[in-house]
Image (cartoon, rainbow, N blue to C red; front, side, top):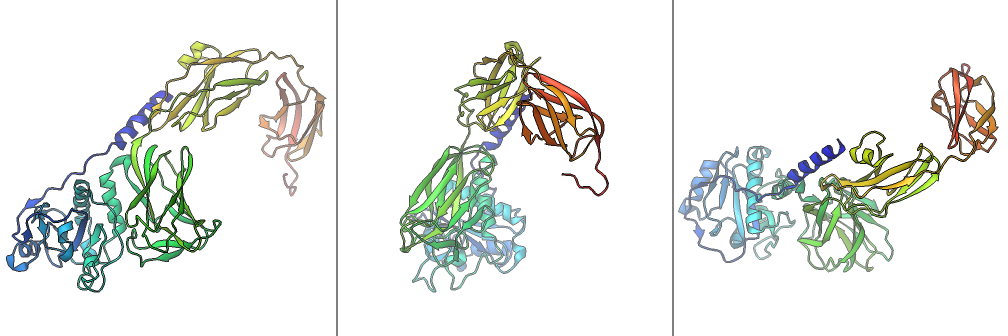
Length: 524
């Protein structure tokens, strides 16, 4: 059953981890004469507009030679139609000095109205932009900042931008009601579908936290990710730490990249640390360069869940600041099946217990330890077969075994994405014979005993003993070869019960009466 369940988990996770090229939404070709043939620059930007009117009127106007304007695409208010007016290979007239490098998309509606952004128009916008980003290798990010007060101070951001950033002196679209963070997330989800989504954590997202120090918020620097960023002055020793902690859905290899706005006052050696499945690596990043884009730290293994993280601390060259903005975890490949555990070793601790040890197996989410009293039972998981889930531990002491008995055993490594590893060759261990003497009980005092009262058991051969009363395990506070002392556990059944003392050499028992405490007497 365990194999079947793990295999099902593998097949499901494999299917969910597959990625595919985004599909271009259906478009109505209705050409406009308002364009320039060809392009003088590579497409690196998608510009989002609002029509400030209805869909039909916008299409009609942008086809009118008198308009002197156009866009590549216009999306209807409810998302049921997309009209393409200009071929992507040609230059439409929609964003002044950004014409040659960009694709222009007009969304039917108004920048000043929240009702523009419905679940009719938005999914079509996400689909179209994802296809454009994939096709023309446009970064699916929203750079901050705007141009100056005139075209003399042009905007230079690339990725997914608003018309207002290019012409802030006379444009505001797509407006304050347009959610840029959701937009970027949805586009990235379409670029990397299923379990392989990019995970982007901005400094305003739930996965980001300030663990120590005083980090200020900034908005003025160009090339930031999202609306703002955090920064802190550097120090010889770390006094501040920012953290980005993803919730990884698919165990596998991820590319980790950081995003920050560069500047001359930035640290030339900002220390980013990546905690991953195989350890931890720290990288010194020069934040005076390579800003406004994703800077790749490397490829790392991550298990599913929240065990991995990226940290930025402020122990860098003094006199500068370190910037905490966004971190991206880009899925590259699912984990393979883990390697077979090696170094299997078993050491008898007593006639009834054995300590099992093994080496870590690469890509293992966890280990199962299997034992049986015959090779056939181990192979068939029948009869005397038993197992224990050790998690990610590489040792376990199995108690309650039979003295002078051979046990066949193996360790099974698995992970939820890569599936199950074939069992390594089983090995065996034999517990030593029981050469000691079984315990005896000479007295139990007091008897009757009250719940919470201190109980003393006298006898012989009591070293290493455990005690139960009425099936309830007791917590021994003092132990010798001839005496055991403990409080009677509050959960012990009342009435006539049996005291059982057990060691590796055997057990002894005697009767006792357990009473509830008198009213008003607290239990200990």
